[in-house]
Image (cartoon, rainbow, N blue to C red; front, side, top):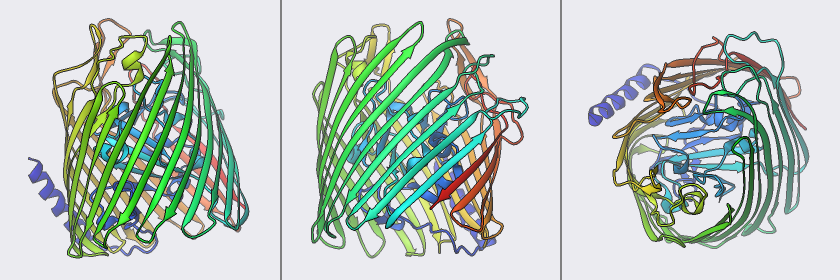
Length: 616
């Protein structure tokens, strides 16, 4: 069945381009990608369909959360991004869950060991402080370690890039309503300011962001649950010569969010205070045929929940990564590195774990179009011992650099180390747990035409082994294996000089187990129209098919089927006579679609937002 779908998809791509030959002049699709090999490679040399959001892409979404922005990408469902601002986020990427997604900020893993699944809460971040995002899907533990099973999200924060002193201000205000409510009050405020300075070898950037959002109850109720968030960011770079550089950073992110009783689905005065501080230092020394890179970071997290079931968790992580990049020839590139991570969390007593992982990755490039990316990592964990992961990713390009077909395949494994909560926490802890393992196989094809048309079809199958579940005696590795199969399709085309179109479709089927809140079918689309040099319009469309959910307010929980829904958003951006002044107006869910993202919880209706960006 998959082979037929792939053939039909390839044929459709060819026909689509033949019937609509565009002239793409403003957008560069064959960008340099780094995330799937840690080498800067042309897109044609990469064996993955890496997704990249640039700074200009992110600037189109003033006032939105990062979760809401990446929720429009192929193969990704960020459940909770359409609900009230403090909703718990679930990262359903390729049928997986939060502990199968690894988040890195400026190259450093930022997993919170105090959280039950050791994931990272994207709610902490401010979109205004982010410069770019790269997402590579599939098993990537060979390069990135634990948790990189369904996706790696690499976030780069803003740094000083221009000589002199420059000021940036981003501000937006808008409504925050559920469906069927009249737009009559402003209750969503986002403001940020940053100053950057670069002089000679030194560069500095500091920024502050604040968000306050009210107007929606967490559960379907009458009492609103506000969120207040603050973000402080500082980064510095020192480049005394062309072969040596140092960068450092400090991030302080915190928010306070009220929430309701999710078991009885009733209003409550509960609230969560969450904060994280990150300190990082990195250096790079270039050699004639390679480079030596060293990165260290220290992360402190603190979460306090005030409710009938209070908790207060504090944790810290130390991460170091030393790697050596070497180019033997124009064909052979290699990385050899070692990563050390130590985590600690305060439960009833302090719990600790550590890992030391040597790894190697080799890239092979040829002039005839054949490329291969392969690697090994040996994970050495203080509790369960050693675990080996591997990856093999060949690809073959037919055509030229600006006009080619690319055939891709990969087979790779990933591991998810048991969290400290699973090993030593207060509920059902089991120190004898083994790591979960995922094995992912992919095959796909990509068509690229002269910066004017790009389309890809990819089939994947993923096997989950040693899945950790909460059973009668607490957390255990279950003997049953689970399988997820899916299809990802993405297309970008310039329909005319001033009109660009993007769309993607994802099919996800998780077998052997009933999954909640993951749509089997999901479609995203956008249409960008550059009306004048100063004015642009963008329309976003999203469709989610029926999903399974459960009513946890009754025991045993009852099965629920959530209806399909479709959302339409519209935005306009205009630059005034001074190109450094930009105003934007957006309307989300313009048709006021009535839907449920999570059973019993509120979902956003039609809302308006007015934004302003100043650059001096």
